Image (tube, rainbow, N blue to C red; front, side, top):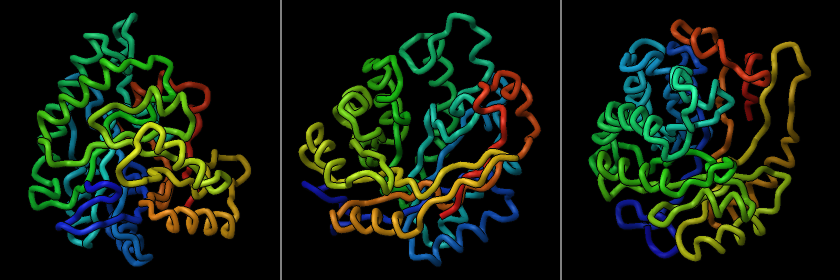
Length: 304
């Protein structure tokens, strides 16, 4: 990064990306969806990695079939798309427990998303498996992953545990090195940016077409006077629940909001661009037992 822009191959660069949830798209369609994203003019895609999808039981890791993350990432390379990776450990994504495995709750007094030793032990174990798979794929190592998010919208969580964020930063640097851009994402409010950002991590914001881009980025500048401006989740629509009215957004309003972001010189990720549909997956039964009432219903992410 330079003063106010990303540097790619020594030149200022910004990305225009879209989010895709590989865990909500059948593998047979992965290439088709990525190709269509590329053909719209995107130069990058943003990808969550749900922990509970890949470690359904403690120490039992699954990266095969519909969980074959590396195959999915290989397709992004094949199609010439850069990747912004969001491995959590908490991802939200309208996904069971935000991607945290249900088995964490076997310990009744565990404090999730904090520096609780039992939680950190599980996180460290998971990241020790995931991050070595990511490290060779970093742009600095000849791959196409240009940035990696640490946690997700942590400023919206009540704990505001900076020790937890510092621990994650240490683990990510340990496995990924110092050359990769690590970032946080938070809503555009003072409290969210105060509790969700950390020195050593690029701060980004998220907001939709109904928000004022200038005001959002000015708020970001209060906690990060220098560095690239990024909207990591520009909301192109909203999710649907099975059996309920289809959620829709004004194409004109979404386009106008996107134009405002681009005119500010910011990088942007459209959330969602290809969301797919929740399917009942083998190995997810344990998680499904502890859904909150909001997550008991399968969702369809609204497309742009």
